[in-house]
Length: 353
Image (cartoon, rainbow, N blue to C red; front, top):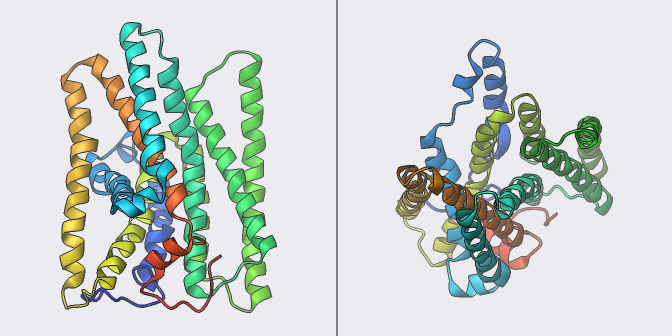
């Protein structure tokens, strides 16, 4: 159980045990159980989307990134592309795309491009977050990657980003003839490369421990293994992307929460009950915003008729793209500002990876 004071164990984002479970341990166990359950129970039942989880976890993790980016004018202006230029471009592009579709339903290519971009960009988002988790926990645990080890690990994650992008492309695009053959063959190649990349990555992580004399800790290893478990699950059950999204959101949420607590601590609030006093309104704001956007807007679109559903699809795509871009900008622990915000409570024995 987390202590009621803001200051938790200094070598953790939440605490050492919960860090392991939240960073992917829980998803490895849960998805393994879901996988086994599909052998006995209808896949439709197991893989059904639960709106409450979308609102409580997936939606809140989107809102948490917005809360972090726009927490102050100074912070937002330090990332002008994430805070201003990209969202402005996405809004203008989406309005133009929707105007074309409303004029003629066959002019849907701009909308399809938006959906495709969000789907493929997700690959970079997942693999980028996996590396961010590994680097963060390595920093806290004093595990140091050499330049070569870091390059090899990131190369394996780039291979998996390629696997994910191709997987998404195959779901969105159903070509005929030679294009379909090429796409199928490329998928087979990426499947083998994915297996090889896992073997290489695990070998590198063993090498890190032997070379530095400080073994790779469980919470550095778990995000890496969890990513591969997610992709094995998606390989067999593409409709299970929902559960992978929930797993990803659970990984993400402790990090903006930690920044929120560190900011409050820096402001001088170290009193008993400060943890609940800070996180309760923070969580309620995220939940309310998530319910409005990810439950209220789709419901409103349904009430407005079939034509309005494309509006929600476009909105969801631009929210996704913007979120991925935000995270790619602000979650770089090599950035001293980010490192100070995230690790202000800790005095880790190592350094950023």
